[in-house]
Image (cartoon, rainbow, N blue to C red):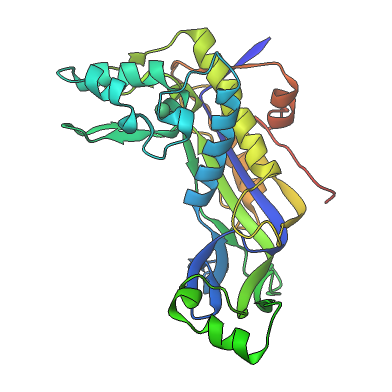
Length: 327
Ligand SMILES: [Zn+2]
């Protein structure tokens, strides 16, 4: 039993405590976390902690790379076998092959050669400008500033940390002041680093029907079995992204994932699965309203098998709703 999928979206609120997954950099001995300005549901502007969509996309792509590297049905180009960020643009065999070929032929060869380039997208710029749009889309994960009663939901603290030098006598301090020692950070180094706790809003969308689809010549470059294998791998990588959100400072500030609750929706015909931001406290209800829209046209759709993953990602009403957690 299989269900045709056109697109799928996830909107969720995550309660994350004491994490430092995404930092801007450092000023002096102060590490600075990401802060962004957003307008909340009450119409007011807030400055809140956030994790960039780039960060989430990278995490999901890395999980997909690992899944593909261990499955012969999911080919990778020479560059993606090394998880090179340039993807197929750094595969010299591919760039030689597409010389003199049309953009449509270059995209066909790309989707046939590499699972990662097909699903994560790329821009071929060697003697041409040929884009491959990503199937997976992630928004910023942003702190929900206040609840409906105006109580704060997200905050960031700064915590003192020091790398101790075992020898702290006068001679050791003088040695640590030398130019080479300072560049190598060999001395005792005090610094402050951030940790954020709160409720975060997440939105992501997956254009399932575009797996293996050549947007330039408007046909699939893969057969149904190959597309299905990539579809399953994509969903698995998304699941792992939420199970293990790799990011900064995990060695000493592994995030406490206290709760994850939200809505997964999919469309079975040519209508985008709705994404209503969980920054709006009414987002589950608004999502249900959007799901009542009925598509009237047919379009090639992905195919999702009846697996445990499907049941966890797609369990029915209205067009799909899943809750994780205890609320
Ligand atoms: Zn690749």
